[in-house]
Image 1 (cartoon, rainbow, N blue to C red):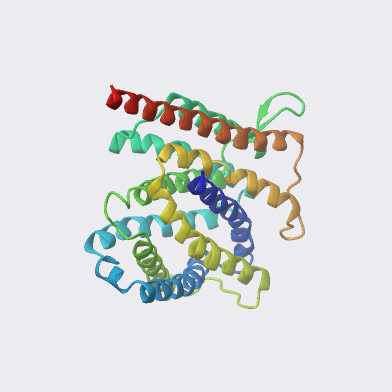
Image 2: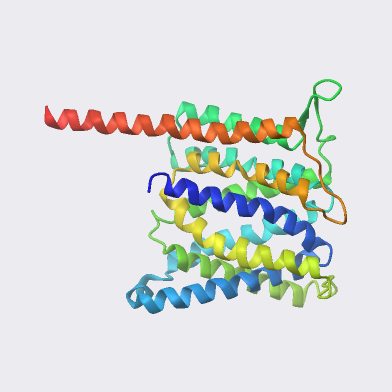
Length: 321
């Protein structure tokens, strides 16, 4: 199926976009460490069941399912995952879901830049312009750029929540880059996911038991528990399995363009799903921003695919000659 990987990553982005709201629900009943412990536990149940099913169907896969390289990569990505999600939970107490989503989305710009600097991954000019266009779109839908009463930028001087989300964005970029290299490192994607989620669960559980014993954990708060289940079973569970399988098949720049859609879904979801009885209204300028991002992704993919087709045709002609 044409664009299969792109569509799968777009689905991942859609579900993760709603995860920002789920995190705000988590904050109503749980502090970061107990909240993340329960989130990773829910994810571990889903991933463990899927792993057992997969290895039962393909016993030979067990030989290379988890290697030393897998564990080395997990040591980095797992630590960055716990740190970034902790920062996100804290940041969302001081900023809106749409602002947080916009700032987090900066990692889609950081990602291909890191790939170019560290691994010398090529970036096409149209992808650079595409990244800029997506960045502009996220600014519009998140109300960071507005035109009410004249042009203005509405980050309010980068508050505490915004600064924490900037740090989170950098951590997510590094983690995403590591995941995108799994194929070249010959790491089994599912073995990696199981190992990372296990590592994160153990790290958070130990942190909760040894350091944050007094952290708030209200198991009677139904919205918070639903947020944990969504982010755990879906966001860090089923969706992360798909994400880790798709990312190694795509260039960081292309993946960055698609992942830039996340603020679109977050902003629209925040407009209809009330948190503490309030929603974040959306206007024409936000709709324009969403359309800009989606249009950019389609346009860039068409240009890149035409370029690939031309290169293949030229190579075939050279061989025929």
